[in-house]
Length: 387
Image (cartoon, rainbow, N blue to C red; front, side):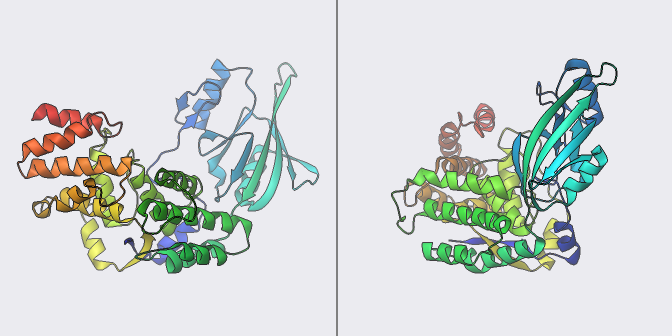
C-alpha cells in the first residue's frame, strides 16, 4: 500500500493551523443561504434584507460559515467570531452544561461561541418586533467537542507512525485505536482517520476482512471519515480528505493540498470533470517542491497510487511522452479490485493517453465507456465530437 508525501511545514504554517478557521477548501468563499427558501446571497446584510422582504415572519436563525445550523448540531473544529451570524435576532439566552440561563447580546454570543471548546449549550434566539411588541424564538442544542492542538498533534503523529505504511493490516489498525488519547473530541478525530485506513484496507483487499464485508462498503467508511475530517485544516487531515475526494471522484474544486503529486492529479481530472474552471498551479510550485523535504503521511491503495502517477505524467506535457498504458490496462483486466469511481478514471486516463499517442480507435473505446458518466460524460462527448 503506497503512501504519498507532504511538504514539511514552516513555523508560519504551524501557527496558521492552530488558529480558528472556517472548514472546507481554502479557496471557497463564504456565501449565505436562506434557511426558508434556499436563496443564496453574498453577505449577512443581504441575507437580512432578503428575509425582511421575503419572509417577514421568519424565525430567528443561527448561521455558521454562511449555512443555517440544524436545531441539534455538533461543533468539532474551532470557529472565529466572524464565522457566526445571528439573523433576525434581537438577543439570545444560553444555558451551558445545565447551568443557569444567561442573557447575551449578539456580540457576546459570538465571542463566547468562538472560545468554547468542550460543553453542551441550550440556546434560545429571540426576535422582538418593537413596532408591534410581538416576539418569536427558536431553540438550538449545540455540542462542542473541539480537541486541543496538543491532542491533534499527538493523533497526527500517531497516525503517521502507525498507519502511513507501505502496507497496513488490521493489527496496525488495532494498534492505532489502542494508542488514541482518552479525550472524547480527540478520539473522534482519531476514529475518523482510522475509518479512512479501514476503508482503503477494505478496498485493496490484500487481506481477508474480519467480517463478511462487501467491497463496495469501502466508500461508506471513506464518507464517514470525510464527515469529520473536512473540518480540520491540518496536513494529515487535508491529505486524507483529498485522498477521499480523489477516491469518490469529487473534482468540483481544486485539491488544495501541498502535495505536488496529488494536486497535479486533481488538476488533470478537474479539467475533465465538466467543471469549466481549470486549476492552474503557480509557476514556481515545482521549484518550491524541489527545495522542500517531504514526509510520507497518507497511505493510499495501489489503484489510487497508479491513477495519481499516470495523471501527473499526463498533466505534464514534458512527461506525457513517457506514458505507457500497460499498467492501467492491467487494472481493467481484473488483477485488482477496481471501484466504479476508479474505473471511470482509468477510462479517462486511457482515452487521454491513447489520443496523445495518435491511437484514435483505442481512445474512442474508452471515451464511449464514460460518455454517460455523471462526472466525465460532458468531456467524453466533446472529445468524441472532435474526433
